[in-house]
Image 1: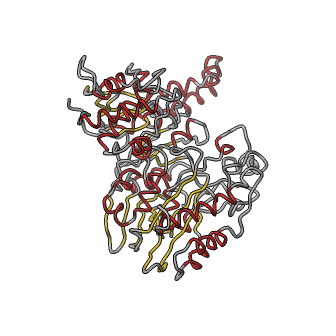
Image 2: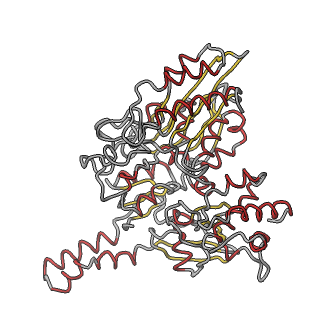
Image 3: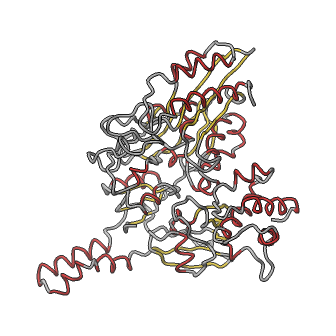
Length: 212
Length: 328
């Protein structure tokens, strides 16, 4: 379970070294100027410099995802959402708007619900991430998952992983006191099918049962 | 999203040094606005200086001021016991904005620097003087329902989208910034700008300066306060109009008052003339109606936002009534 690896910022004093990308840009320019072979010109046209450079510019990232410590290498522009879905094959977390407007991508980072689409993966160094796949204990569903099934808290199901992650956090935050409060503090999760009344019922049942 | 260098300094001085090395470098805090703008190709930094490891995460009481570190998240401020008891207006305003997920990520400093939500700013195929200076304003003769009624210019009629900023301007906050030169303190009212001829500048923050904290002076606004936000749906939408009201009432007389509005100008819109009018007056609906008239002096609407000329005074009156206990 230990992901408490030392934080390894790419540059601890904040002043970057001249990058490999700069070097590659210049070196290929010099090569091109000296020989001008067709392949090098093509390389420039196709921005292979950029692509090659990106390989070197991946940043190390230590994360614990659903209890599993991971040592990863990611491009800094990769969002946490894309890391989960594309690199770790955890496709339970959904990409809806990809702009922080729908909540389908909601996951927990160190226990707090966040929009994984607006979080660059590298900024989560050392954090514990929980996705919808991490809620159940083996075959035993989380009480919130059970409640969503019982109360029919969905139709198409696309927003559901985000709704459930948000709902679990909501109860821990202490904002499930009334229907109005639940609706206000679940407003970051949009459901196009309009399953809101059933979602509220599911949350209220879990709240009453003291299960979370 | 374009490629960029990523650095994560541990010291404030290192972060400022790092951002100063590149003309196209940006600080990254919560990322809720910047990452979105980067995805849209509106901001294309060569380098991101991640400031999340900087020691700017405390809420503390210092000599009659509440000091909120720039990296304290919106949730942490809104849920802070001292803030809730002494500055409930701030908690209300923060909770009126965004969603719980976004408030868990968004920081105090970052909230101050939120860019406008004007659709012409976000649409890179449209002219926008804020995004590309000199390209024109798409909103001026376009669809301007969400736009300003105060302080706009013929270069830009966008509004500041933040709720927190409206409360902070009412609370006379101060912004502490560090930079390559000496650290300085900016009164909140001077932090955000009106568009004038340079709508590309949202604030008076200089290049390479970093917000380190925000101070709120102690004030007797723990009880009669209200933040009323009117929007197209009941939650998770930007304001059409909002009003922040803080009253200090003794024996039904208004001893002190602070008023500001959101969704109406390029900066959080402080209503100082209206405050002067209300000071010493007895609490009554009639007084509040007169106050709202004063607040609307100089308002100018565009083709699609004429409704704000009615909505804004009504919002202010309702917020004053709720804050003073005239209506619940």
